[in-house]
Image (cartoon, rainbow over all chains, first blue to last red; front, side, top):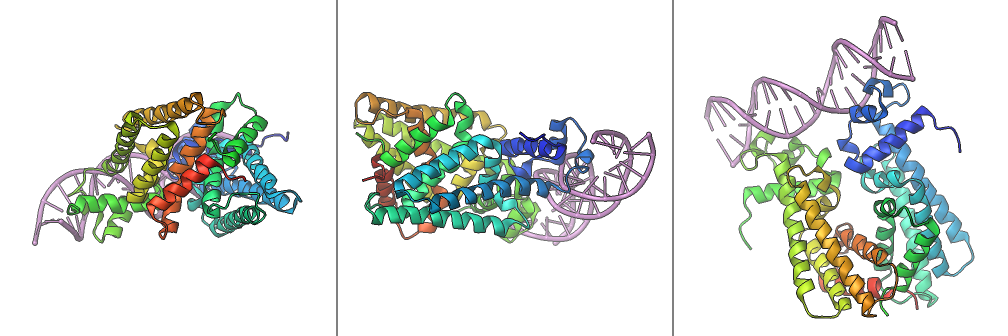
Length: 189
Length: 189
DNA sequence: GTCTATAGCCCGATAGAC
DNA sequence: GTCTATCGGGCTATAGAC
């Protein structure tokens, strides 16, 4: 565990506040108060509010891209790849629950990095969809609408940040397994 | 179809803008420009920005509550009740796609009505969870973690507003059926 | 590295003419 | 019902003392 710099501290505190009220509703004064300093002092460590948002969102988006690249290169069944995606989301969300809120809800407030973020997101969804389509071709997956399958899985996984904090008792492995069971196996007897 | 008053027009335009940028990032000047008038003119029809948010969110939340009350009073299997919940979400979202964004993302900016909103939401989730638990007791539903089942279904359904506008070709009935199939039946062969 | 003070701008909302 | 003008205040960010 690296030492947390003052800048990291600002970013982590901001993530928490952004999760509660959203980027636009959090002021630099709110953030400074939460850190126990004055707003002007923040600017000794960061250049702008926008820079904080960028730091939060882009690093997580790149984690997803890296994780997905590893998964699509692995030589396993498509069902097993979907299980790996579930685990990827559970792990990233468990490590940065607050940041996931900004990734989901505040990405449209990115300025310079908006196009880059959208590119990463589109590539991620394309890769996800391809795994499902190949799973259907290989008869591993039921012949349902592949976009509905992806939509259903992805929106559940993207909302994990809302749910993980309430279930601190559950460990990441158990959660990933239960989720895979429900998302892939369905719920009816 | 009732005639749309100027106030309705403001609320509908605001819903669209709130969906794109969130309540806090949309100014009364933005809203006025989108309507082709000046900001001051809005106040001839509404009393405050907050009143617009309240009008959007509370009416939808009450629709969900009414729909759920009908479902829990119906005498059918629990699986069939879950299918009705899927249909309820698809229908409400199809009728007010933009408003669903505020319900999901801007409820925390409610002032006077925040407690009431949270009460409706908690009751809805309690009812949803009870249907799943009774389905498990009656062996209609697999004995998985009921909260994970609800979380998975509900987050998917709550995110429909992101997805329905991209699939205008699909009609509401087909979408509800496909979704029920995936959410309840799972995806693996 | 934090402070006080403040620049320059935008916010929601109101007053009152037409 | 819409306009122009404006109030009082909050916003991000900077300057410069300590």
